[in-house]
Image 1 (spheres, rainbow, N blue to C red):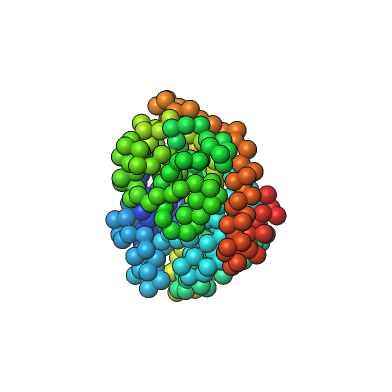
Image 2: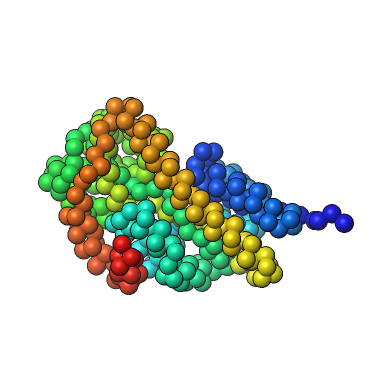
Length: 302
């Protein structure tokens, strides 16, 4: 008899071309192939199933099978460390962390804290970088400037990392505020910098790499527990690969996006001595005692 395919629903908020979108499509094919058609994925991209937080709730409830989880800090304060400024020094540092026992331990603690889900992987979609209309290399260069950043921790801690005045402006208004001088500079992953065409209103791209945008794939816990050991191993293999694939596409994408910025007239500064920023970042972490243990372990891997 032909195999009856169990179709699982997966939701994410990314559009075509984004590493997460592309890797989810590949995962769907791979899961179907490796289970000989017993399991398939129906993917709802671009927020078409639900927005980001509603998808997490739906996954906890079992209405949705697979979703994305960024910072689990709302459930486990210590998990906010992944977004701490300068927690990761490079993409290599991130890869070392992902291969570590610490990452496995964090995933199980995060799963337990969120409740009703199992975190299958972790991945990143790029370092956040700084743009401005002047070259910024030192803390002194920030004097008198206003930086637009997201107005909740840990993003707002950039005021202490860069010793700069910050302002919170909704993302859709940032372009206008940069062109009118309401804000002098902004920070985002390159995907956002290019999508929002900030290169039209900012002359310099500083590769400060001050925060890593990271996320993960979660699966409903009841569904996970219902899988045979053999199927659990297949799912784990497929989604471990997914996380690694997103990391790989992100790095390749970064070079292309940098080229787009250059072609549109931006000057790229990628040889900044970030030591003073990192020293300030370490002080910021002291204000978050729950981060310290994991932060120290992650720093030791750099």
